[in-house]
Length: 403
Image (cartoon, rainbow, N blue to C red; front, side, top):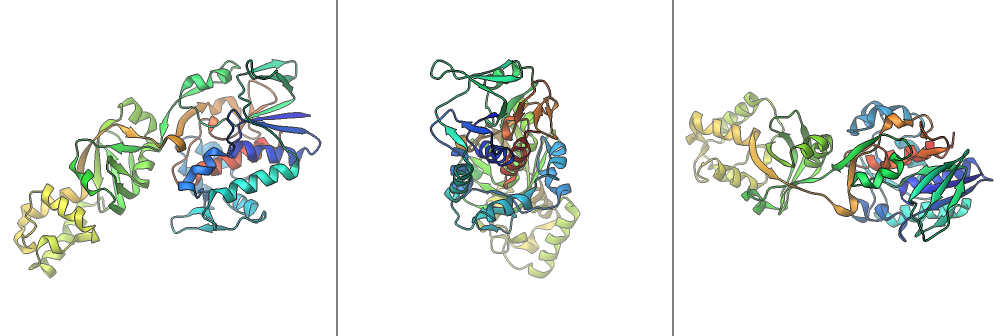
């Protein structure tokens, strides 16, 4: 049996090693269009590779996927986060679970993960052909013919697993659409907010550990750490919001109003009560010197200025109007978003081959027998935190059964 894996990334390698393990006599070949194998693994997590997430509860885990979560819920029963950790650790890769549940190799180097996958492929006898970009797939009886353009002769295969990763443009998926697959238009996911007109950018580098961000006129919300950057806002709260709102924000042309709740408390009465307590116990202190909710000092001063409250004013001089101003700025601080910034190398797309076209028990195409899918080429994507790699390992593992 001849098996082709199209794409030399995380999902492709995982599918390849499991195809070879499950079918030892098969000829398994990875075809990668570039000369770089596992390129996204190399640069992910700032070069450290966030292998998976420490969440082991599938009921919670599947909710980290704006698209594909329901399908993955069943797939995770076959291969989930503990299986990923056991797989790598049993091959000598020691892992560590951080406080935020992100899982990294103890080496803090993505090269450790790359070396592990390359070694496994080598031990099992997986063939690798780089600079082999597949242009077309044609059905020839029960087999599938891979066309490489003028550079290489076409090859007939018995089974093919497509693991080409996300495509930023629909044109990159037309070769799969031509076979009869439905395509969900790709748009960016996991991006940061540009705020060219907002002076808060001068606070770049400040992190607020627990913020809540929403988009005016929508039900979109994202919580977690928020990072102020020289172009606007980033951090898990923003990235989570961008993932769940990928299509809505695309339709808005990335122009909207972001409401920031700096204290992650939606009950304004509780915030007002907290401020009144400060007035009662710390009333003689000046505003600049006593920060509620332990907000970063520079941010607190910025918010006071934005509220037209003098830094040298005392807490007991605020009055009802001053307290209400603070409640508003702490819980509903509004910023204009005009555009996005995506991390080009680490881009994640919302969209791809529609899950309607795939049998998730096997990852086999519903319209083209002997063709399978793994990874982000499908309309699956997760929030930041190791979730996108986990879906690659899970779908690669299942596709590699060639069931």
